[in-house]
Image 1 (cartoon, helix red, strand yellow):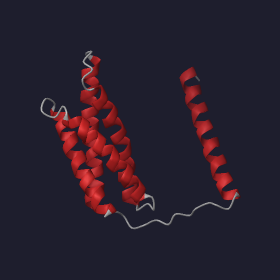
Image 2 (cartoon, one colour):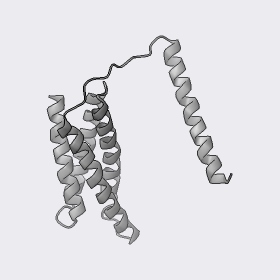
Image 3 (cartoon, one colour):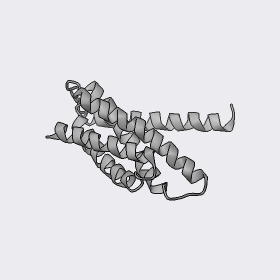
Image 4 (cartoon, helix red, strand yellow):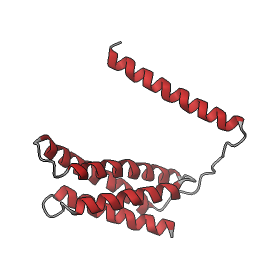
Length: 149
């Protein structure tokens, strides 16, 4: 086993141990919340979130390619897009399974999409990937607002 594999295994073991400890503490204290699943969210929300992930990946790749040439104009765009991808992937998953935490995920994803849309719109006229990402964020924001009422 090389050093990289060892570090990966060690990191996984630490994560599992921490998660197990947290679970045991919650269960031991009698505070383990059993979140009951809801029905799946509207397909339009799920599709919007997955589309954000897809367009975000393209935008992030475009930004990273520009950064590799020494151009730093898209650095903040890459940061915002990276965060949005994580939030929308979680939203899509939780929406698909009808998680009881869907509304919390929608609030977070909406905030991340708002930041990403704002940043991508700064570059939308010059970069098609940024324009597509901003547009998909706008749709996801609308879908989150519908869900949250």
